[in-house]
Length: 232
Image (cartoon, rainbow, N blue to C red):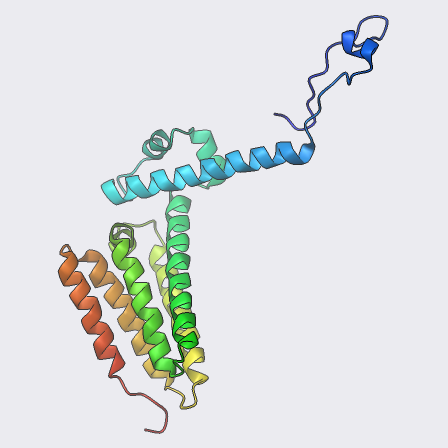
């Protein structure tokens, strides 16, 4: 419904609004603007979500380069116009999927770290490994989507986005380790972060789920043995 639109009947020449006017009943039923806006917002959110789900299915089945906007809107049961209302285009859909995937895995890692801390773990490297293990579990569970982001089949410039993310993670991990009672060298934070990202790629590209699981567990075990505390 268009904001502010009512169901008023046209008035007669005498200015009456029909039978309702004679009985004192309201001549119009007005939907509150807030309720109308809420419904519009819900429809928009549902359309956006449907487009992202369709883009995910099309990208993971045919690849980014081969995917067409018409394929995505057909899968979503939407229109091309609605896609461009919510997104700048195919590349924007891809980047949005990546950002949401990354944030989902990051939240998994944060939750795992909080759980380990609540369980009494204080060693920063063990906390990092708890988060890293949870991050890898998420990538393992969504291998098709993770594979899309490491396959090289991406919009132009996506490699720059990935490098920026890697640098951000390394900086955050260096800051995280610096708060330890025995700080870890910054170089170790970079190595651990890089190892995690390479493992994500290998797990995502591995066709054998059991081999992928073994690989992830083995890398985490090796990472646990890295000793890089400052002064040692």
